[in-house]
Image (cartoon, rainbow, N blue to C red):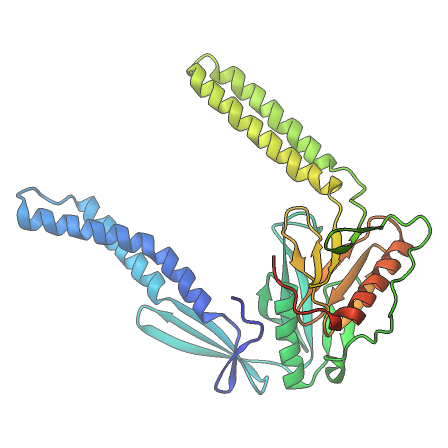
Length: 361
């Protein structure tokens, strides 16, 4: 389970999850250690119980794999931030050689929370998104950690804001939001006691289910033309390979190849087109609020207790954030629907005290 805040070690904030790093290194070290140990046993058996000679290549591979496995198992790289905020401390270890490095920090005036796109992605529908916690020092930004979940990154950033008494600058949306340290835990004032009235021509549907109320949001509007192009490339390449292989391999191999291409094409179509037919929904039940906002993710509880942020972004999506939940909900219709959804979420947060703790699905 991810730590929601930085661990403390004496007068230091530990910026890395040491337990997770140890598990990752142990997993990667297991295979070379097993191979090296197996080769060592084989070499000892040949030397002690047979008259055959040991091949030099086997000895080299045995030494290399054992060396690499032990290196991974003993590797250590951890970063710490001093409680004074004056320096970063890096601790490293290779085998049994360990040392520390101190990096002085310039005075910083705020803690930054940034959205970072990786794998060359520039939109929310492809690639990966990381949320970075950084210090805004005088000369440059000093990255402290990166998380895959906004809630975890926000909790860690708020921990530093409370400790150092500097504001939080949230850069994860189009417009930067600066939150003073003394306002970091202030909830959104809520006075929406009745279900809001939908605007004219609303694309958000309200229906009743066996469990309660359901708000169904409109699907995406634009078609995935890049997916169509990718599908044409796959089909073209498959036809070419089929013509090249048909004269040199058996009919069984050709059938297996055709089946694999068919599965790839179907997977590409489903992944590309299903999100454009999927309609996100929010369920209001007696046990709490459940939501499914992504086509390929499971439904999850929407816990709006202590709602700290609720706003419309660019008239196209609604952003809600509390200590327990974060989402940017796309509204694929018009700005009036986005405002209506914001009021619905405010209403849900207002009446949320009447719910018991929602169970996970």
